[in-house]
Structure formats: structure tokens, C-alpha cells
Length: 258
Image (cartoon, rainbow, N blue to C red; front, side, top):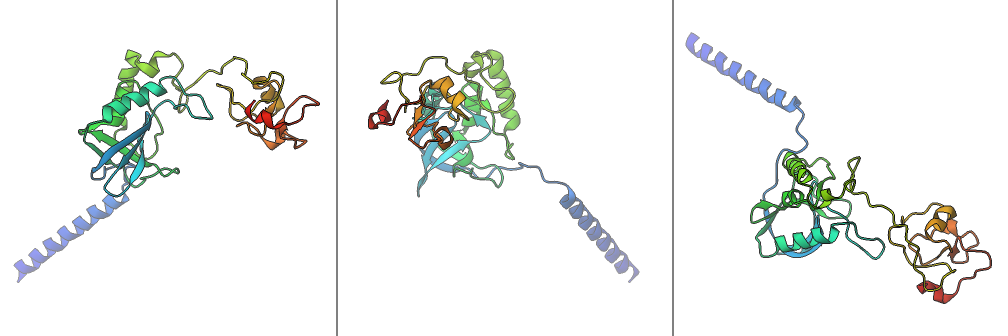
């Protein structure tokens, strides 16, 4: 009888120790990024730029934003492309074609505010995010809670920087004080169809946001039209579809193409 009581006491003591250990584990803060999701197969569709790709699965197509990296911005209708943006896109396109692609998510955040899937992309089981950084087509950037491969990518970035590969070959181009890249503003005069009149055309290298007429005239000496990407109602106090224009100038339909 006494032996049974002793055995019961030992079991109870072991159980209490186990409960204590479990409670202590619950009190330890979980790391921000502790595991990857199961890899999922996808098929290549197209490349948007050096860090963004379109893929599809058996149901639909969707956009991927490669985690923890940032490649130069590609040119659009409203902005000029950054150095090495075309090269990064071309390299990524060639690298992905013909390979078996899979993706994995890093912790609970799976999409950004634009609906892009935040992933690690693998081509024949090689981490594409790291390939882009290692070869100097992208930098480490947009570090949020997803950090599974952060140390790996930082090591590749350090190597690429030491070798002055691509984006690292231009002194001061990679923004070491924050995200992205530093592109100097162009000092070229704006091209217009008719000199001396407000323009509707965006000037390469000019900021998109211009806070007042002083800034407008710095890049567009004759003002801008309502069709211009930088037009704001505060530039056009007389509400005549022209912003910061010279006195006596009136809006005409041909100015839409000026």
C-alpha cells in the first residue's frame, strides 16, 4: 500500500513539473518569424520587375512580391526607370523560365496592402530572393516581421557590395540611410510641343509631387495643364485647367498633347 502511494506521489510530482515547464514555455515570447509554410508549386507567367512576378496555380494567377529584397523601380507611364531596373527584370525572367517553381510563406502575414503574395520563391529548390541579392540586382529591404532568411540575404548583400556588382557599382546609388535607391534629378530642360506654353508632359527625373508654383516652375517654367501628373488644384487658383501659368494664357484643347 505504501509503495502504491509513493508511486502515485512520484507521478503527481512529474505531472506538476511537466505543467510548470509548459507554462514557462508559454511565457517565453515567440520569435517574429519561426517557420515556413509548406512549399506550393506554381507556374511562371511573367516578370513585372526585379522583385515582383506573376505566377499561376491550378485555380488562378496572382502576383508575388519577393520577401526581404528590393530591386530598382522599372519605368512606367508616370515615372522614369531606375538604373539596373531593366537588367534586373531581364535576369529574373531568364532565370525563372524552364525551372520548377515553388513558393513558401513566412509566418502569418501572407499579403501586402496591394494584394500581392509575400513569399520566398524557389526555382529548382534554389531561393530566388537570394539569387537576386547575391548577383547585385537587388538589395535587402522591406524588413518587416518576416525574417526567416534575413541573415542569409545580408551575407549575400555584403558579398555583392564588396564585389561592386550591378547596383553596388554606382557610388551612393543604394540608399544606405533607408529603403530604395537614390536617383539624381535631371537638369535637362523640359521638352514641349510649343515652347512658352504650359505642358501636359511629365519631365523625366522631376518629382511627381510639387508643393507650390515655385517648385512647378523649377521643372516646368511655363506651368502645367490639368492633364499633367503633377497638377493639383492649389496650382490652379483661377480654376482654368492651367497651373502656375503666365498671365494672359488660356487653356486650349491642343494643350492636352503639349
